[in-house]
Image 1 (spheres, helix red, strand yellow):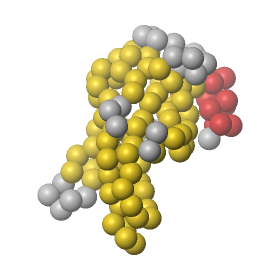
Image 2 (tube, rainbow, N blue to C red):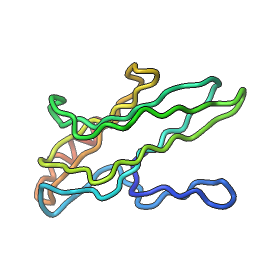
Image 3 (tube, rainbow, N blue to C red):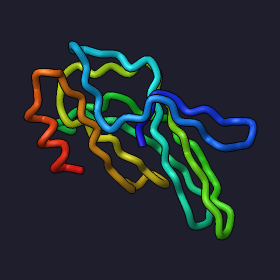
Length: 129
């Protein structure tokens, strides 16, 4: 899940601010001052997670997180939050957000970055999801 920020409440619950599935921006390049990627995990064990954002052509890395460890207790779950600061997107398109677990690709999610006059990409991103 993508959002602008994640806060841990006194109760231990997470509050997500500015949840989005795509970004429509007035001009490019655009800088996301703060952006979070939230993953929810179940099962059990200790893992190392890494998140990276690739350009639409997958040839360049926009941002890479530091590897972070997390533990899932037996029969339990955990949430892992990766925060990116001052991330710059130079072109419109379907950016690829990859989650790696123990240095192996686990999942990919598409994050469209759109200009208002590009309605064609909306249709394309809906087909990807």
